[in-house]
Length: 316
View 1 (cartoon, rainbow, N blue to C red):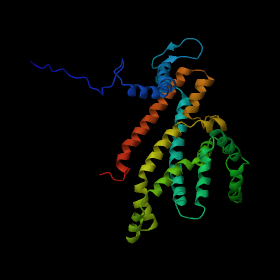
View 2: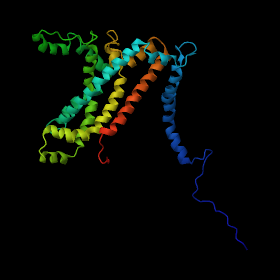
View 3: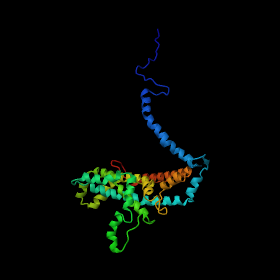
View 4: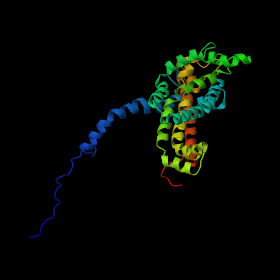
């Protein structure tokens, strides 16, 4: 009698639901569902909705009038003089703020990498200002930068004998932006921590080899420290550029964009258009232009990084 070969059911087969998922897969989805809901509703949803709004004239009350690319044409053609000024001010701030923070943080991290008594106290002291809130820092520096504030009282000791008056930091169109840039160096602690971690990851035998070869202090910094710190420099520069283009709190609290729009940043201009003038369509277009600017410079930095950033273990 011929034996019939029938496939026996697998005893360990997993039961699948309507979507073809096992219970383990379904359980994983249920765990991630709260985050996914928040991402779609509060991040991805508003992100794409703002682009639709940027194509309309919507002022909170009433319906939206479809305009197409009119807002973008106005922004890119330079018809909005305040937007052009805001882009210039923001670029000015980025050009001086980012390199300044990198240099100051690098020097401080190098000094704090030395083995001296009480070094944890010094590290804490330099890091603490970076965790203070933006509003508190802005109010503090508002008083420091006053004509009779702490900074000018210190400068007067040096400048008065020369017959030079300390600048009016917040009341002058020439000195308002430099004043905000000086204030921005108050929070170099976060960047300093990243550099300090990079310093402590450099193998000491490389410095010993450099000493044997007779390298000077600058030679060791140039040929050992800086090449091995390029990943940290690259990371902090990318974060610094992105954050600098989104400067808002300090300008709002200290100068509100003044005097004469000398400290009007793109994000502050966006805020005024959206929540003061109630022109959400135009403000959304500004937001997307700002997003394009940040994305462009981020891509440029990543492309340039291939030429100068060195990662340990990679082949070139």
